[in-house]
Length: 269
Image (cartoon, rainbow, N blue to C red; front, side, top):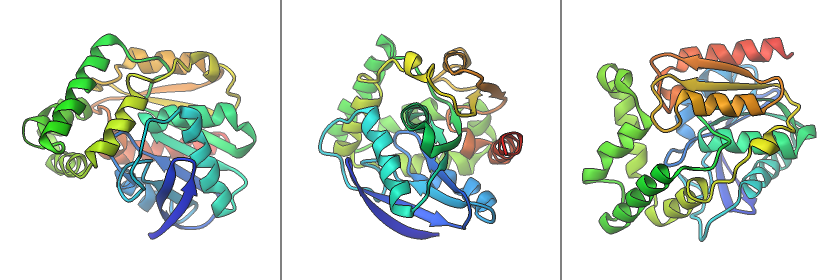
């Protein structure tokens, strides 16, 4: 894959781009970078222009200097596809990426093909989630990063019992990516995506593009019922639950995720 950088409203964004054909953009969860989608890139690059995004403040993208809005994140996608010369793009997002995929579909219906929104929500965060992520970010700033006693809670938020028991390579990847996070930048991202997260259910009710919503049966961050509520807010959305997957389904169950995306593309060709 080739690295590419695009100037956006949220700073310079690093992309990894491969393949040719219709554009397919992948946006990961908080604390992860575009390599979350490596298995999807390998699968789709022979038929699509695959665009793996290091989201604002993460990976090789420019550090954040303050919080952001979800509308600004949608503008980031718009800047990326304009820079690449793509008229339309399929958007596949996980968690934060799923929320932004829905935002983009609602605000820019003429620029999107299908949307696959995974392990995400359209609801504002509850008190418990705001508290837990607040403790995490404050502790990480004191420790200078996600390390030591914070590694376990992050792993537990992202991975379910199946991955932790049977997939040591997935556990190692999550640990490595989380520990790379620029904690000052990550704090702005967490603030924007957790305590300041908007209620998007009414906005998602305006989406008219084909949408597949995927939940992980073992997801402790966004339980199945919460992700299903998001699907219910989107007219005509298809809803699927992946067994033995938690919050990072693309990493935990790559073959199943690739098949879901392939089938959804074929159904909406």
